[in-house]
Amino acid sequence: MSTERPDNDVTGPRRRRPPLAVASVAAAVLLAGGGGAYWASTASGDGGGADSATAAKKQAPMLALDAAADGPGSPSSASDSPPAGIAPGEPDPGGPPVIYRAAGELPDGPDEAAVHHARGTVESADVARLAKALGIPGTPRTEGTSWVVGDDDGPGALLKVAKQAPGTWTFARTTPTKPCEPGTMCANGATEPGGDPVSEKAAKAAAAPVLKAAGQDDAALNAGQLMGDVRVVNADPKVDGLPTYGWSTGVQVGPDGKVTGGSGHLKALEKGATYPAVGADEALKQLNEASRGKGDGGRDIGGCATPVPLEGEPKPPSDPQCVPSNGKRAPVTKTVEDAVFGLALNYVDGRQTLVPSWLFTVRQAPGGPENTVTQVAVDPKFIEQPDAPTTPSGDRKVTSYGADGRTLEVTFWGGVCSTYTASAKESPGQVRITVTEKPQEGKKACIMIAKELTRTVTLEKPLGDRTVIDAASGSAVPRG
View: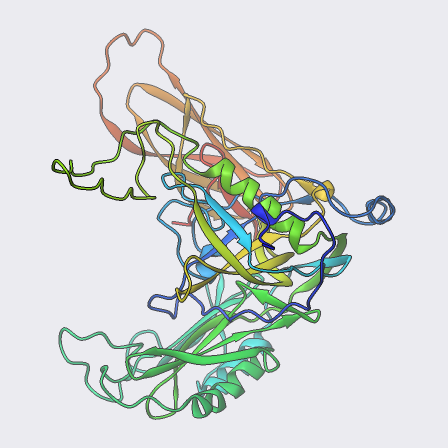
């Protein structure tokens, strides 16, 4: 009798098994490749008991998950890369829908869990401790919004740490141990590929002081990644006893056993409100609903180009990735082989936050590579859905900004025959900028010339560590 259940059908009696750990994820800034990893933050459906929901409402505010935005610090920067322009966790709108099917029973998980926020600032003493572990002499100094230790004008070593939480840090040792041959790729000044990397045990030992100084000495380690003759130690910490996804620290160790580079977060997270959680079955159901809604949606974009068989020859097999004449792609099925309850990186009101999530280990074909797909596990009753980005015809996309106290200068492209005004909507975690275009009256004919323009907005409070969001696109705006 078959036990296969379509699309995680959860009816009938079931046997529960404990979740298993998932593979750690290397920081993207350190990796050259890797498996696919996606975030899915869309939450829908129902879950959790009425009693727990009523109790939680008395102490937990609504969780305002932001729409995923591109740019530094976005979730995608902490893991693998989906197609350009596709938010982590969202199915490619140009591709077929994806259906996730569980290979066996999925765990229930805890009844509730807390979010963890990146708040506050990094102290000079914390930077000095990390610099000492990396072997960099000197006292931390201020350069813009960062702490800096070391020399960035010549050979040596340089550590940069963002002052605002989560205190993202990067380190590079720029003195090569051997000349890097022209045309070869060298990792942070290490020797050219072809040498002998240190053993995993030696790499972990070299990374241990750095991880301790970064507050991640108890993290799960994976030293299997190689970049030429440089071995990368990836550390995925546990927070509040739960595994994390998207919060990795990476340490590069050269063939001489010395740390040559690295990146991670230095500011400890703060525990926030506790929310009722849904089980893995319900989370998988939500993931499938989001995938169906964000797939190609049956767009009529043409038929399949296939060779015409000769008389008497069999018809060639159809390509499941091809769009048939009715415009609907056949869904791609991926198998969920495991699930573990943990914390995954999301944005809440413009700030990086670890949110209770299910981490699904997914494989598209037997023997194929494993990916990790995450789905927010917070009861949907407590999730405030982000507003869908709107782009009125008179609005312009902001390309960069500069800030000085309460003054925000925004840059955008506009025409020479229109007037533009900029306004801001402020919240504790972000500032949303809208640039509105108004054609000049009496201009019946106008030359089509675009030019880069700036407008100044006065904020109610200094920008601080808040994220600047372009209201027209919903994307984070880079500082320029």
